[in-house]
Image: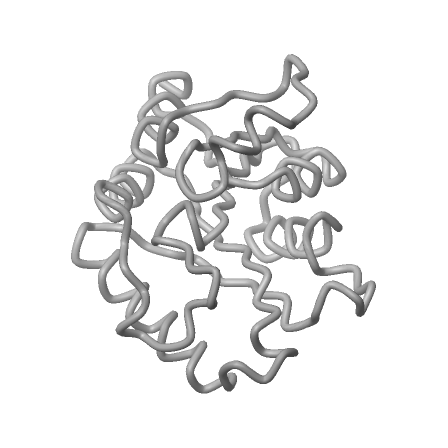
Length: 182
């Protein structure tokens, strides 16, 4: 299997989402099976990057140090399951800032590919929102939608094309990707 890049949204895909934002490490609660799935992806040869809109920073709901502590917990817990996260990208801007990194813009997706050294054509992005699918498509990456977080609602609204795969959760998605890659 050739090396592939797996780009994963954080909230609603790896961990529970919260309408009040994830503001501290103790609020970061992994979804069942997600950490093990990232370990499976690592062992299957995927390079893994996380991309996440974090407008709570722009809104003053938490500080950058809090985000770093949340990500440190994520990295520790993924490592306990044999997973390696190559990089974490986040957009600190609010929706009104019109930046190029906030999903649905493809900036973080392209940055993840550039950091990995792998081609966008060798990448898959897993998310739970229409903005994740839009960012993946805009970057030329295969989009995958999971039905955790906002995914069940997004699956009803999103424009279905041949490039979109929909799975119940991250574990199902990664198992399917690993089966296709062998």
